[in-house]
Image (cartoon, rainbow, N blue to C red; front, side):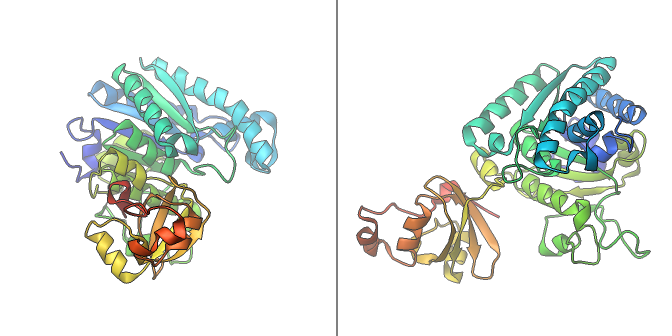
Length: 377
């Protein structure tokens, strides 16, 4: 059953598996302590969803904020990478214990999963995470997932739990993602504008939708995290997963928003097969292949990427890395697994197959990126 309305997120027939993302600002108060009353209300909602037949995965921020308060670190623990990693180490124990106690009070078992960007970008590790989530959910436990900030660096990390939630939803085979935010959803302009309109449904993230969250646009929401939420929606929609943004600041926020039908629901656009869904959600891209207009049109019709259509190569990648395919106008058309290194791509770019062997020193492969290892965006 396709999810087309917000209230369906609490319907087991439409959303058997639901990923709920909770941000630091909702979980931790200004004093660095957990907001226990609010959390207890949220957990009671999770228990109700589970009792009704749904399976819930929690993606929870808050480790750095909790740890920084306990360590007395300035700037909320984000003054330096070392501070953030240390705060995460201290705070993660507190965070996992907090969720475990709260869920246990409602008769639910908690399971902790700490992941890094690499755990979900590497295909083998992604499948391991998927298997673990499936087993935990089948056993009736509530997985509590967070990025492992104690070892993550600025260069190799999600950086936000919105995109992490979308990737976890893919790995878990979830039907929907629910992002608890400090706003009701996506507005067509800055919510402080009396003329601002809350979008109740988005049928595909387009350039027009992205502009509503751009830091340079009238919305002014870019620095507040709406951009990452749209990126999460794009990951989800390509994998056949609905994603909703609701206001999490209220008591029992899920029931409050769903009963009122207030929030923004991003409709699933397609359901790529497992490997292609994983490719479409990849964040850590190692380079880009710039292609001409004719090549772009051929890709849209289902063709593989051939060297003859490449006009430029960016980055330093090796065979098997995921790269983007970009049109001459700068628009990203697709991404996929490169069959050649960046140096080899530069050597054969613009050449037809019969001219490639002399540059490579060996017989060329059928394609630079085969259509079976590519996903259109």
